[in-house]
Length: 269
Image (cartoon, rainbow, N blue to C red; front, side, top):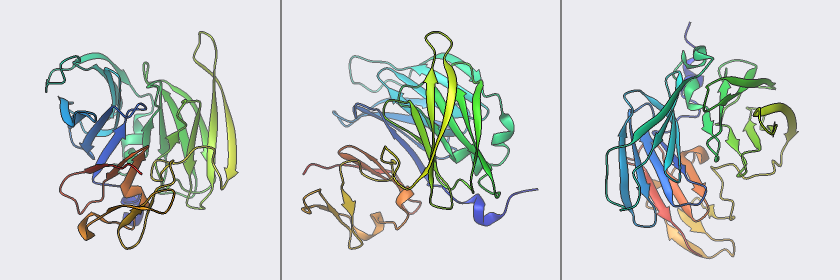
């Protein structure tokens, strides 16, 4: 039986945007589309356009590598580099089957997916339509489930990793932040998952909030940390849904469904 419609649409934006940790690249796609565009943020030009052949639920580009979570799979590509010229070719390095495909049986579940900044792990929240949810951690290379933990309440936002990839956090409908510490052995990968929280102050800023303290006001102005007005957003670029935004340092992506394309802005105070 399908989950209630009111929950099916939670957490959705029209676009998926993920910035590389060094803010040099950004990977953009429409939710459940099959094409990923990788942009060079310094030059402002597309580097590669990848046809995955399957619906995309999340993706992340780091250096010359991109990982995408598609239906029941994690695919890793090697991007063309060196000339900053559009090159549609990208070589598949590996494809791993995610070991819990039932998590993709409802399309709304699959948006609750995040890939770690080091491209090692995938976090998936299962069950946002029920009273209880589960956070599953998967290995990008093998697709194997490394561990699962129950969540108090429904997960109603995407999980996010700390910049070093050693913790993953999520927020439930209770407004509580809960997390996992990922402890790795020298050779065997993940050996321990320690549950953290609940807390109202997670140690890292979720991607829908600015780590630099930038704020978007109701009148459309973006304020810097000093309160200085940096940029005014036209009305059709605004959304009250904070998850329809993605912050990464000086960059802001606007993702809400009224936009025909994702909008990416560079801000400097």
